[in-house]
Image 1: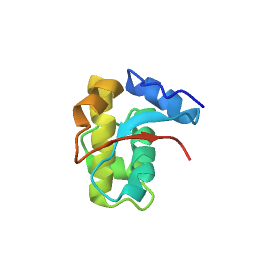
Image 2: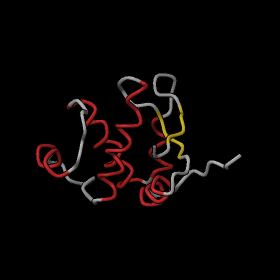
Image 3: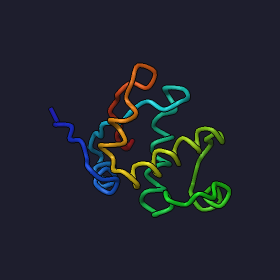
Length: 108
């Protein structure tokens, strides 16, 4: 069984994502089956260094968002933004609670 390692920084989380490894995360607002798509867009933002951009209209033009709703896109941006500002592990620890349970994500 593969060990799940908590990345400290957003860039470490991106490296794990790109390698197809499991990453500790939390369920964001929205349908449970949409979590993969939301996190994929968040990692696209982190990888493109777009995550600290506040202009969501501009981000919509440069970050492939598939069929995410505006709310889902904003959730992806929030994940990327906070992870880049405070780190992946701190972000996850601050967001896990009964309405946003812990989960493990990985690149499809």
